[in-house]
Image 1 (spheres, protein in one colour):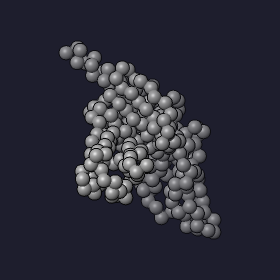
Image 2 (cartoon, protein in one colour):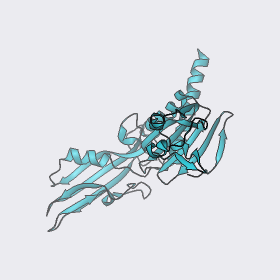
Image 3 (tube, protein in one colour):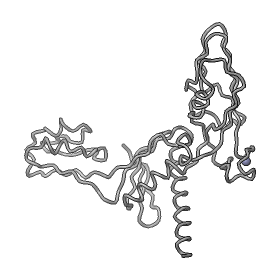
Image 4 (cartoon, helix red, strand yellow):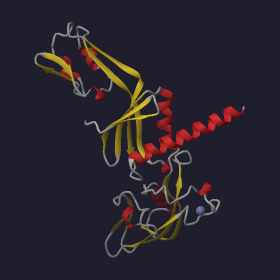
Length: 278
Ligand SMILES: [Zn+2]
């Protein structure tokens, strides 16, 4: 675990990034209540747009897989999303009919020879080099010898509120910040908690029971059950939450969080304006 930076948003909320990878981010938000934490989680799931295949034209399919199942599998491939260059269809000048500002065409043409051939997501050819599958290794269908597949697919932006295939996150979860306390006077250093804790929070250092990496604590309270003299207490902070966001690969986890915060701010402003007019 390492601390990257701390920044203050507004006056009350403080965000600290705990760990960041290409496809996941783990951060701490302080100064919010459970309703706001849940609103942020739900916004990431349902309001942040992502690009996904939404229409498929099957020109030829001699494989054993039905066209409908193939189209469904194509729709589940995460595509790298460029929110700057594309409009949501309902906000586009074409009124959702489909144009180069709200739609991207991908094609797929594969034919097996004398051997079986597995068709992968990486075989899709996109008209826009920025809109490509997030990973090339997703198997779509296995062609038996002399089978052919010719497909034209149309990708567009959408949100998780419309269909889960548009969600840019594979996981977004939050939990309370645990507070693990050891009463040194009651502790007999029996080490039962050291062995019992599945997250390895406890250790004996210089003949004293100490805690480490307490943010990893899942609050399972196995340590409390194992501890005979009741020297350990597990509690949680009411106004701080640990978030873990994992991207499908459609965009970076930072972009997802930033976009969700902007979206939430916009919706709160619209609500306040509406209430103000009543
Ligand atoms: Zn359009």
